[in-house]
Image (cartoon, rainbow, N blue to C red; front, side):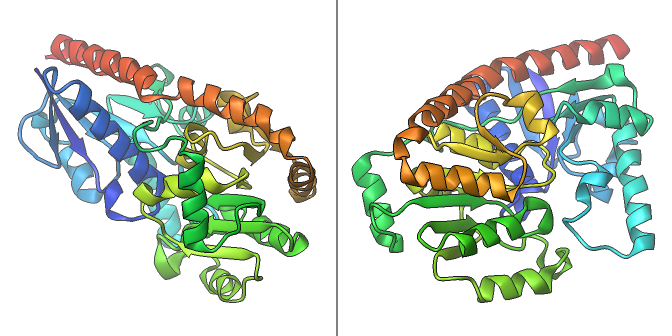
Amino acid sequence: MIKITMFSTADKVAGQGVGSAYVELINLLKSRFSNEFDIKINKYGRSDLSHYHTINPTFYLSTFSKKRGRKIGYVHFLPETLEGSIKLPKLFRSIFYKYVISFYKRMDQIVVVNPTFIDKLVAHGLDRSKIKYIPNFVSTKSFYEKTPDEKKAFRNKIGIPEDKFVVFGDGQVQERKGIDDFYKLAQENPDIQFVWAGGFSFGKITDGYDRYKSMIDNAPDNMKFTGIVDRNDLVNYYNICDIFLLPSYDELFPMSVLEAFSCGAPVLLRNLELYQAIIDGYYQPAEDRAQMGDFIRKACNNRNLLSDFKEKSLNAAGYYSEDHLSKIWYEFYNDQFKLYKQDK
């Protein structure tokens, strides 16, 4: 068996996509490869492979131990992608950003969830040959299309009429997620129900915390802020929405989009470079809030328009499924183990 140690605190903060991706991978490896991989979590004994999911200082120090075997870094973010997410003093921000890159440079192998990160990491001084792209995925056991009766029951539970058109968004309440546009769309379309699941995972150091807290407290009648929702309950929101909207200005590889695909929800996104690289053709693109609003109103007036997008979502879900990605991860860890044995 290959001894793999996972180093992560990604699941300690609720409402983060990094934590969701980590949980999905652990569940996949334990359920499918328990006879091939001996998985330990945050243990400092000897390993063949050490896979770092978060960049804690204690984890950084552990990279200097010979017990770590071959070191794999999972890159979910770059320094520049933190802009608009958390508010840090200028001096501390500069030090922290240098630390992030230093951590990545300690790795023997880097895995990115976003193919557009590759050139950016090379620009930061990393070796291109040591960087591999492996996309995120979600389990269809957790995210799937529910029956009409189940959808109706959940709408009743949260007080949304069965025939009400629903636009749903998911993520941390922060500027980068495009929450301002989502909020304004709700104000511009009072006959449509808007729901946002997410909160302040970083608490009061969230960039713009006071302003967004005020927005939540003074939301229009057709705008629901649920706060952070447990992943086991999120599946219900994806199922009762007519459109899943993520108006982010900058993204990594959003788990929420994959979760929406898996539930068969039509997806509307700001047309970012990342999406063009990984899910082009599976979603409705929009360049700005005006285009988002146009599509939402057209779909509300002609709901048959969404049938094609529902099919596109389910097709995308097949590609980013547990079955497909399990093969990729299995081959990856075996290849890394071979390199580890060669280097010994």
